[in-house]
Amino acid sequence: MVKVELKDDSKIEVKEGSSILEVAKQISEGLARNSLAGKVNGEVKDLRTQINEDCKLEILTFDNEEGKKVFWHTTSHIMAQAIKRIYGDSVKLTIGPSIDNGFYYDFDVEKPFSEEDLVKIEEEMKKIVKENLEITRYTLPKNEAIKMMEERKEPYKIELIEELPEGEEISFYDQGEFKELCAGPHIMSTGPVKAFKLLNSSSAYWRGDETKQTLQRIYGISFPKASMLEEYLYMLEEAKKRDHRKLGKELDLFFFDETAPGMAYWMPKGFTMMNVLIDLWRKEHKKRGYQEFSGPQLNSSSLWKTSGHWDHYKEDMFVLTDSDGNEQALKPMNCPNSIKIYQSKLRSYKDLPLRFNDIDVIHRNEKSGQLNGLFRVRMFRQDDSHNYVMESQIKDEIKEILEIAKKLYSIFGLDFILTLSTRPDDYMGELSLWNKAEADLKEVLDELCGKDNYRINEGDGAFYGPKIDIKMKDCLGREWQMGTVQVDFQLPLRFNLSYIDTDGEKKTPIMIHRALFGSFERFIGILTEHYAGAFPTWLSPIQVRVLPIADSHKEYANKVAEELDKVGIRVEVDERQEKIGYKIREAQLQKIPYMLILGDKEVEGNAVGVRSRTEGDIGQISIEEFISKVKKEVEEYK
Image 1 (cartoon, rainbow, N blue to C red):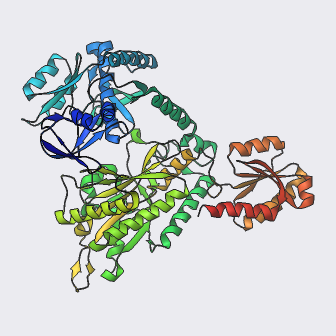
Image 2 (image 1 turned 135 degrees about the vertical axis):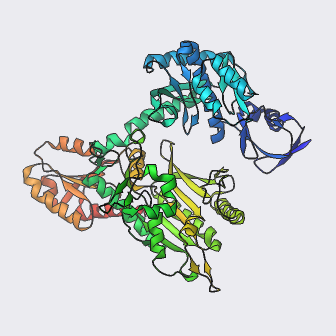
Image 3 (image 1 turned 45 degrees about the vertical axis):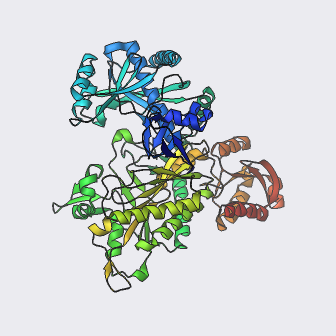
């Protein structure tokens, strides 16, 4: 018998050699029916994997992120099998992984896939699912693996196999006649994939290299139940309506132009929103002891060489030569400039924690095919801070940072999930320091979230330290990678940072990189879709539009606007010679929170007729009463 520790810390004994599926059945028949894979000592494995020694085991279902990925990976194989059945050897297979929300597979084909092709492929996939083909795993020596792929006329698979080291295990998965080079894991058979949809196809390059073969990529999604697919497809349709690129133009917030790919032009209304968010960010940080600074946009290559970015990140930087022939680069991140601020004077243990934040514009040379509205840009303002602490202060500092995140996200009604990424294989620094930092982060997350309410990505930390990633959920349930909190042991050493400790000796501080919004550009893109452009009053670029019914009411309209402007309410007057119904419709399309309709009765009564975006007609009230209503609504977000 072997001992198995489960996710809830309980322990059971199972017969040595039992499969993960058999262990799941021992726990619960219902769990076994829904199980997709298992996580053994942190590594995701097939249900057919045997348990031969004491271990930690988590049974994965579609409710787990890892379980979803196994399910989606298997669906990519079903799609590839369907395509091979339909098109035969005219299609060459490459790779087909799961992704954050579904899967894709890249194919070398003679012509792009059409909508009709996708329908035909889906029909063949349904047949494969109905056949409920058993999925089996086996391994082959390198020469036999190459021979099998040569017989199957799959040159891309041969290329992948040839690059593998001699003696490495080369695994394959079979389902019916379909044989796939794959590390896995996969579910037990094709039958559980009850509902799926091929979403679109696009061009892609083999291995992401623009100099290599152009392939056709098909994206898809799948679920164990049809109702889950229907809900997802509804969400996609709703997301199209909320597309921030579309709303950005319609609401005069921002736009993109071919003269500056990946760099937004911010219209006055959009830039007003940007400044409202920046003011909020500054207020929340200033009262917590953060000090804002600004650094150069352009730095010598020597700075980036010291930081390590020149060796690891140069291809993603905008590099140029100055008039003296020296290499310079537009900064892709702010950490080296923050370090320069730290180095500007001698530091003592009494100064720590020391928190330097900034919102300088940074540039990253993203590939044109990766640009995506405000979500992936080449120029943006990152809400950065770099906090310098002693080892004993890591826990409290992380806790304080997450409290700020909680406060900021709650303002927008956004839920968030935290993920702890631990020591990777290529880590640098002392193991004892890593263990201490990871233990501190886990303790903070246990305290703030509860033990089972955050995720752990074993081995996914940065080489310089563990990190916590913050993923937000919007009103459609979509997850967005937003903030990050990273503990860095290496940059302080590379730059020889120090502080004078209590014993008078020089010590090296630990650096915590953190961003909470991620970037203001991306955050505004997410908020635009979250609110569908109907921003809350405090954030809306125009809070009130004044609508005079006739020319005789314009003077009073401008007087009302002046009164609102004096108290900080963002207001504009629509003086166009249009019918009032047209003006109201225009204001509604612009999603303005309040409209003030002014006619003879309002002028005579020194009042305003109020129409709310959410409540409809409120009726006539005094200017003072309206101002009080708006100010109260704006203050409530705090």
